[in-house]
Image (tube, helix red, strand yellow):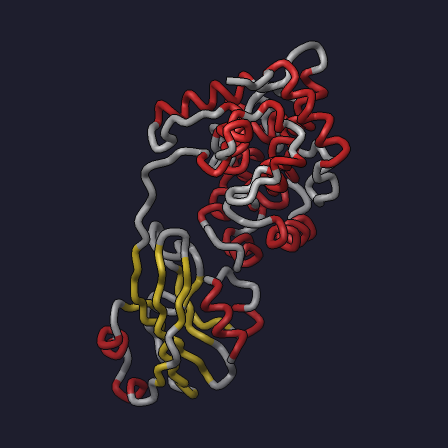
Length: 348
């Protein structure tokens, strides 16, 4: 293994200072609220998408106290369209926990941060290192790629023991010495930047990489081999029929989705497993008005949803499907809605 651990961190820090990303809205701050918010939003979501949501969240919820005091519906409404809604639910719970159990101040230690809702080991380390200079390693997807390539780490990350070994290896690359507290924020950001801009999954920019001389994968000419993971999750599919009830004043019937399940906690059209069940839920006078709209495919991480919207103009009929309520356009515009439901309503 050719990596020069003593010099690796120094090169990462120097490169980040001159060539790394330094203009993102959540950078150049040691405010743990902003760093935490960005870390949660960036999970499985690209920077270009997160920028707008991050700014809107800060405008609406400028600090952890404001977020904790908000209703979950308000949080989900602002999150709507960003996807992976369990992140928003955990975000809200975490803010409340920070306020209720930690006096409104984020803990400074990664081990304590990891006990908060929705904060895993890597996110906890990112907050602790970026904001408080703690010497702890992060291992998000991008950084895993950098570390496995640099070290030529070819153990199967589908195995828990291999993941534990990679954590130890990543810790071994961290800055050392008397200036470690000052170096850690830039080192952590540098590792993120390397994974996002240089050490790309399929087309790594090895010639321009500042740690090419440390990298076992580059020396062997096979960076795409890393990281090694033999087990992949199989994709599944599901068909759902959406009952879109619309009054003459534009109000629509929405119910809150149960937890756990698809779109848990969001406001949504009533869902059915097939068209027959959907029609059976309607009084005969309304079933006659049903119009099947073109099917829509919505892609989740490991599942494809085939959505079949069914529009029923109820006129001024008084109808109550039980769980749920009518939302006027002004109300549903700010509600937490699944992205395909919002698109349907906005296209009407």
